[in-house]
Image 1 (cartoon, rainbow, N blue to C red):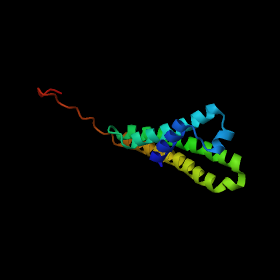
Image 2: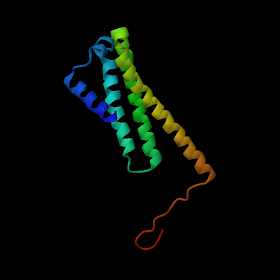
Image 3: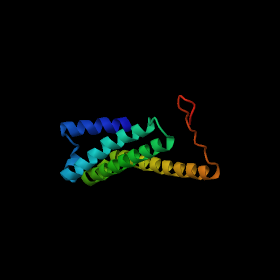
Image 4: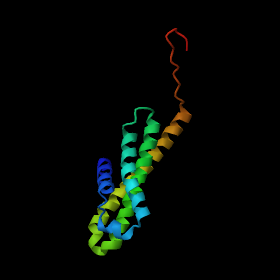
Length: 137
């Protein structure tokens, strides 16, 4: 889903061929925000998943990305219903599920980070100090 949002969003942005529902309902500035949320949300979430540093930092980066993707997907689901009405229910339902999944994942990360913070309060993790080549710390 994350790779697809980057790929599809990039193709739409480069070619300028937007779906009819987005073109009819969203003014150009809103289209720009929508495409930015799709592309950046997917890319940022992927960066968070593959974050090489601290786990908490990677989770926060992923959280920002999936929240952005959830927002962009929700925008498109609304546009689908606005243009297609009842005929767009299947497509809007799927895109809306992607939006809910992004928001759900962002909430999961928030709750996990809170649990980590509480666990640190109970049992603080010692900070390791590296020694330099001369044996000094």
